Image 1 (tube, rainbow, N blue to C red):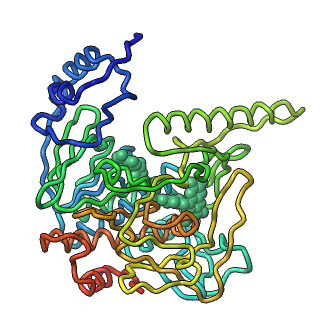
Image 2 (cartoon, protein in one colour):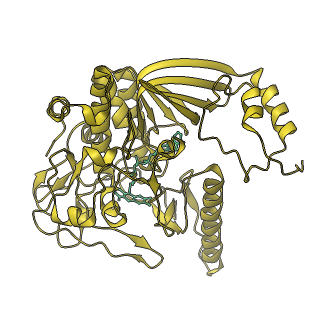
Image 3 (tube, rainbow, N blue to C red):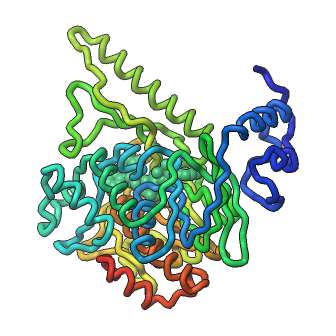
Amino acid sequence: MKSTPRHLSRRTFIGTGLGAGVAAWTGIAFGAQNTADKDTLAQALGRRSANTQFLENEVDVLVVGGGTAGHVAAIQAARAGAKTLLIERTSMLGGNMTVGGVAYPGIFHAWGVQIIDGIGWKLVEKAVEFDGGRMPDFMTPYEGRKHWQHQLTINPFLYALLAEEEALDAGVSICYYEFPLGLQREPDGWSVATAGPGVCRTIRARQLIDATGGADIVGMAGLPRLREDETQPGSILFKTRSNYQPGREQLQAIYVHGADSSSALTRTRDNCTGRRALLARLRKAKEKPGDNPRLFHLQPEVSIRESWRIDAEYMITVEDYRSGRKFPDAVCNAFYPVDLHTKTGVRPQQLSPDTVPTIPLRALVPKGGKNIMVAGRSVGSDRLANSGLRVQAPCMAMGQAAGATATLAAKKRCSPLDVPFEEIRALLKTHGAIVP
Ligand SMILES: Cc1cc2nc3c(=O)[nH]c(=O)nc-3n(C[C@H](O)[C@H](O)[C@H](O)COP(=O)(O)OP(=O)(O)OC[C@H]3O[C@@H](n4cnc5c(N)ncnc54)[C@H](O)[C@@H]3O)c2cc1C
């Protein structure tokens, strides 16, 4: 049906029953870009509410995004005794590692020593062992530019099963297919409204961890975020010519330039662009006489390299990263070349011998943010530093650090930066993490 472009007022939206009594909600896209017909939308929402469950939860820690960093954050918080709820818009944990198909986590070792341990590493180890896979020789530094020699290949399907089991066993309440619609600051935390098919939920949380990869929740809260005009391409991952051997090999990939995780509109566009490019490649291959490549495997969505990062209390610079600066409030290590993908490909720049960068707690806290942290690739950093920090081992380590810090902050009724750092260090060490 064709609709007349018209603005939808906040009052109309609240009146439909989705956000009753929450006049100060932010984050819902009212304004010039709204083209929905007001009456049609109101009718649709009215019909829908008859079959919708309205739920309320009160928790210590709310994690939004159950990807690489988020599932580790939730497991850590729950194991440390926090009542923890995890909202994930897809149907499984792991994010880029599983739904994206980037099942090659790195890098947990540097210069012959393990530098990242804890919940993420133990899960990766368990997945490799369960699947009868092989670990690389981490004690021998990789040759020259071959940093991929220290990346593991995990079975993403098995990883998702094990991660979910550990999260549920730890006591995490998982809510798949939901996403936040809006949120509101409270004196002692946040109220967050989420929705999914058949569900509208209001969550009161003392501490919020934004692990969406694109600082979606930080943006919704009106806290500062940054993004350059040009971002690294995303990729669509697939396998042709022979069956995919998960845990034994990497997938093929096609770049999707301009990929942007910030809305359903951009995600839809990126998935269609990636799939169309793949179809074109398959058609072209078929034109060669005697060639008939079959498509054996396709990941459900484009995986994203770069999106919004937070403007944090401390922004990690590429100089900090390259010099291996040791921050007094470092919560974890990181290790990877500076690795910026552009239209012409990627030329990783290796770190100098014995250099191990670190990540300070302040880089997980948005400027002026109270009771909120990020974990994962949206960490406060300049673009070049971020190109190394964004890989999976540091994302998992940031997740664990955010989960531990949020738990302590919830118990003490304070903001993350007010928690005595020695207590964060001690809790992380109890749960197997390496704190620099
Ligand atoms: C093609 C490609 C190749 C890569 N190669 C490697 C490699 O070889 N080794 C390596 O270690 N790293 C690699 N990386 C980098 C790495 O995979 C990512 O940077 C990392 O996984 C990001 O973790 P994250 O937790 O920040 O985000 P993600 O893993 O993307 O998790 C974000 C989660 O949040 C959910 N989410 C997002 N928005 C919402 C919302 N509004 N509501 C609810 N849920 C939401 C998503 O569904 C997802 O589950 C690669 C990345 C790409 C794209």
